[in-house]
Image (cartoon, rainbow, N blue to C red; front, side, top):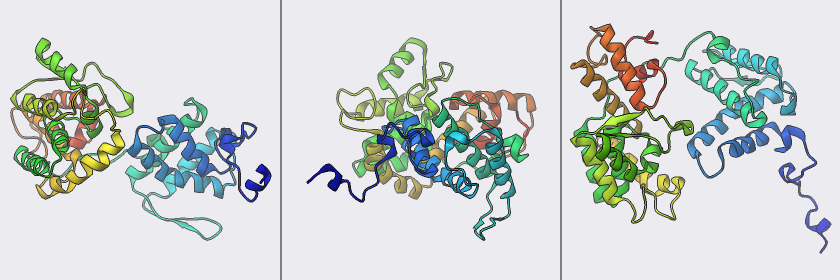
Length: 342
């Protein structure tokens, strides 16, 4: 059988055809090419949740391109991206009707910002620069509503109960992630990939350790150091105890982050929820509240109104630093408080 017969009726992938330049050679359709671009940008071996989230949002942009008869990403310019921003703004709290009769549902302010953020990432993935980047706040005319209003549900006793359930079920490393998230404020990926030996060496030398591996966006902030205490040492010690032999983190030689999430961490989520802690991220909020209340020597704004604005700003700066964020305003998503804490 000839190659021509084997390939009959099949559509060749443009990604494998070096002569195809449409959508920067990543695919015939904008939607397909966008998914390939995101995979190439983040690499297919990591950032699974981030890629999945962007791919879900990028469907909106792909549909917009189709409605505007934009079939080649190479032809997208700044005015086109700005026009997309105006389209998203038009969907704030109301439907958008297209000439063909199709209707797009309204979106929240937060999701509108997320859509624009995804397009900024997508254009960088395609082009390798930020020339087409737009500001969500400027285009939409409104800020994100990222201020926390409900009290944190991440009591240490509840976390420990969930960890004990995980240990009993055979998920010791899942329990270690819970402890590291609550004691050190680590994200899940940070807890999985953190170099535990390095942290222990730093603690012995300086009494504090930096959170470096697995950080969001690949950022490594040397100033994200956290002082040791009995609770944090116990969490770190347990993680070192249950890690695979010969590993510096919680992954074994044959593990990937994705496999760890599926096999070790996902079974722990219902245990955490049944213990009164809604998510792993809530454990990080519990850590943030501890930092805030330790500095103010009093309750967070989620429990009572702010009394000392100067100390409040100092505490928010420290919360943002220890969580790995560069802006004080982000602390409001964890400890609540005033919206204009910038």
